[in-house]
Amino acid sequence: MIGPIERMRRARAVRRQLEEQRDALYQLAYAWCQDPYLADDLVQQAAAKALQNAAQLRCEEHARAWLCRILSNCWHDHLRRGRETVDVATVVCIDHHTPEHAAEREAVVRRVREAMRALSPEHRQVLSLVDLQGCSYAEVASILEIPVGTVMSRLCRARRALKAQLDREAARPAARPPARIRRIQ
View 1 (cartoon, rainbow, N blue to C red):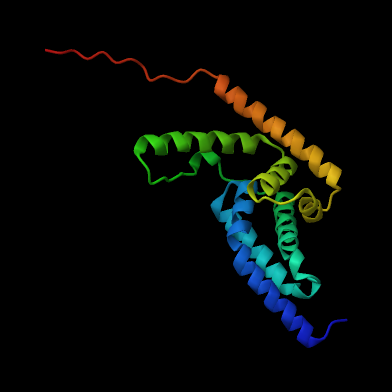
View 2: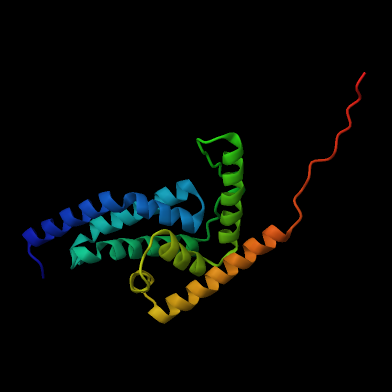
């Protein structure tokens, strides 16, 4: 059993880690659910649970993985409740470059989000933890509470599925606007 001084030290450590990791947790939650409001709610739930259970954090070095595991549990709770997510086509991407660059980037982001959305939740989680957050396989295994080998196989399958989805999208003929004939007088 830990004493009150140790409990306060751990609570301060959790608050500090939450401040440092909030943006990364939001990006991770958004990658999983594709809904900015839901991602914010998931991060808030994870923060509340982390603060409530700060005494469980034994080593501050593992705080990132601990917070990601809490976020993952919140995401799984949400999925179990069966709520629907917002269609990624309704999410607007803003870029401050030229309109052409912004349109190209938005199209790429939209294609990748649609391809990510087609993946299973387990594949989305592993892919976003490794490729977006830069977590090691061991960290992902700890966060998701699965063996490292399972992380590696899910990641391989997720990357293959994402590539196949993007290749299928690229192979489709581009929709051209109908030709318009103008009459000049």
